[in-house]
Image 1: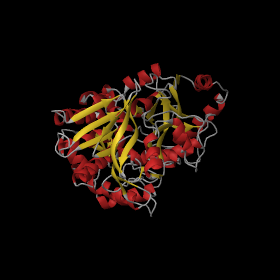
Image 2: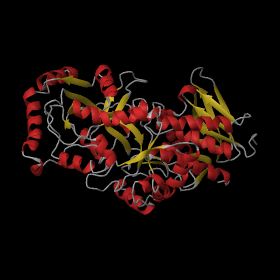
Image 3: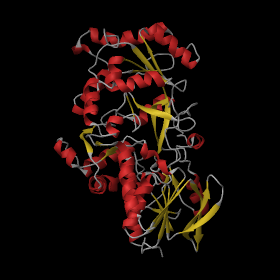
Image 4: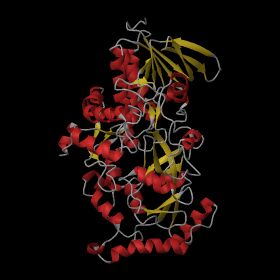
Amino acid sequence: MGSGGRGEVVVVGGGLAGMVTALEALRAGWSVSLIDRDTPQRLGGLARWAFGGMALVGTPLQKRMGIPDSPEVALRDWLGFGELDPDDAWSLAWARHYVERSRPEVWDWLVGHGIRFLPAVNWVERGRFGDGNTLPRYHIVWGTALELVRRIGAALAREGEGGRLRLLHGCRVIALDTQGGEVCGVQVRDEAGGSERRLRADAVVLATGGVNGDLATCIAHWPPDRPRPGMLLNGAHPFADGALHRWVVEQLGGVLVHPERMWNYAAGIAHPRPHFAGHGLSLIPCKSALWLDHRGCRIGPEPLVTGFDTHWLCRRVAEQEKPWTWQLLNRRIALRELAISGAEHNPSIRDRRFLRFLAETLFGNRRLLRWMQRECEDVLVDASLEGLAEKMNALTASLDVEAHRLRETVARFDAQFARGSRLHNDDQIRRIQHARQWRPDRLRTCPPAPLSARGAGPYIAIRLRLITRKSLGGLRTDLGARVLDRTGRPIPGLYCVGEAAGFGGGNCHGRRSLEGTFLAGCILTARAAVRALAGGG
């Protein structure tokens, strides 16, 4: 029995799901050992760099903006867009749990910890045919996800006073200990010195992330319905390698659900100052840019436009002849629309500098554009399309892009505007006009205009590659986050939360996410695990 009164819990993984699990367990009276492979300065894992968007249902902010959302509407969107397996009872149950409980268990819980949200709900993943989010649900944490990590970390320190919390950094769990069929501890290896030891526990909670941080594992599980890319950037945490997933399956009879289902992004660029090999940054692609193949031709016949169906975008990019595509835009578009996902490149939100954020929104983010032009090799700028084509070929060490083809691509698009707005007949223009009807999107999306409009230059080309992000599949769990074996029975003493559990049930998102469901899913699953622990489950 630990000093907390209930017993000892080992939490494996110091990302958001692990931190919330540890915090709630301490509050419930447990003593906690939180084991993380990274350094103390990087506690929080990928959440330290995440943007902080959350899909939440029925919030006061939605009500203030006149958004008539409800769990029933959200569940219909979730199940239709995600295409969940009808026989996957636990994933379906977790989808229902998310839409019904995201308001009280995420929004209210975070507000209770002093977290605030930007005063606007964004509308993402609408679906190419209106089959995604039929209403805006994307709430942005004021301070990005880094603010979550800071606040939860401070609460952990307070709750863990008196020796009830033990943090083990730079350590890796290589196996679980069992006795009489029950998980009773872990085997830990010090990553630096190589020494090993055992920790006893009344329960073990896996919060180890998915498989997308290891590119070889990601490719091994690549979806069979699309070509395997010849090149991938890594936008996940490099320690998310699926090693404990495999151990649980092989040694304890756990079930890994749909490891091939992933939430990657189509617009990655190489990080100019990488934190690890292959590190990439995920752009929020400009809606008004033309998305081109390796030759400089517009990808079609349906143009690629962000904000509607990320799963489809990734599929179309993976189908291209070469493992890179281009976005072609101009300075006018870049100032208003160009953005990089995450805390690192959104300092005005991260540091909660509202006036600076407002100025960048209204007048353009010149700081980001200057940084990208100076630091990012994938971002090319030229006053002419001929000069831009030459730079594009130099970057790819090819002769793929012919200047006359680039001119023709731009000319065909710009010709739409010579006919007047009554005669526009381009699906990208229609989607932009639709997006701009929602006020937050109107602020961040340019009115449609010719790419070669006078005064809008210079031209900008950005080389894009697929970038990994999240695993949608994971270990099978019930609504108490208990890991289930092949017979559907809980493995005594073993729980799984966050991405490692496919954010609940093993695959609660199905094939697609409504976006913003990951950070919130970490909180929901973590809190469910501690409730089950408190009930002796």
